[in-house]
Amino acid sequence: MKQLTVIKVGGKIVEDEDTLAQLLKDFSAIDGAKVLVHGGGRSATKVAADLGIESVMIGGRRVTDANMLRVVSMVYGGLVNKNIVARLQACGVNALGLTGADMNVMLSHKRPLKKVKMEDGTEQMVDFGYVGDVDKCDGKMLATLICEGVVPVMAPLTHDGKGNLLNTNADTIAGETAKALAPYFDVTLIYSFEHAGVLTNPDDENSVIPLITADSFESLKADGTVSGGMIPKIENALEALRSGVKQVIITKADAIDGKHGTVIK
Image (cartoon, rainbow, N blue to C red):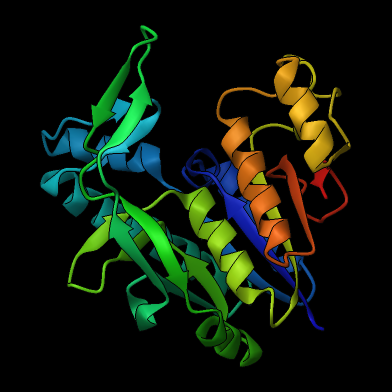
């Protein structure tokens, strides 16, 4: 099957002019079919503050009430997404910006009350508001676009099929997109962020773990080498592999050529 690369890039990268320019240059240079999935949380927080809307984070996750939903819809689906699309067109990439609502490409349900561990160690049931957990991604529709030479640029927004947009984690968007496209392509999913990969020492960028398997992941969790937000990222990667994705790579945003970082297999 034809090769396809799904790149997920975090908000810290797309919101800085220098790192965004390098990322888009590198993304444009990737051979073959490709998809870009982006975040944009810091921009949403800034715009919300400018509008007098408080950003509430619990356990590192954004609570999305009605006012914040309007902000993230404007920022993710508009400001950030269309800026990336315009910049990619300037690089010769025929990009198309999409939310999950466009072409019904990603359908979600509103997240129910969720038990969250608080900073003081206690657990609390939290209503995250208009946050979506993905039920279905239409890989056939995306594959049709890709086969016509279109490069989808996915914003972290989905919908519930009842007229409501939902704020959705960008890592999840990337994983679900990769899984949905696995029947049509040999998919490599690359999570890019500010570090060189999964590190044994968070203060040493040269301490990259070259390969993580399901078995070694359990050991790395047990001894504390892998912790915090890296745990769900690797769990998502392993789930993608079980669903037919060829390989997952966690790497630095300036090293998305598939030859660097931590490979999850």
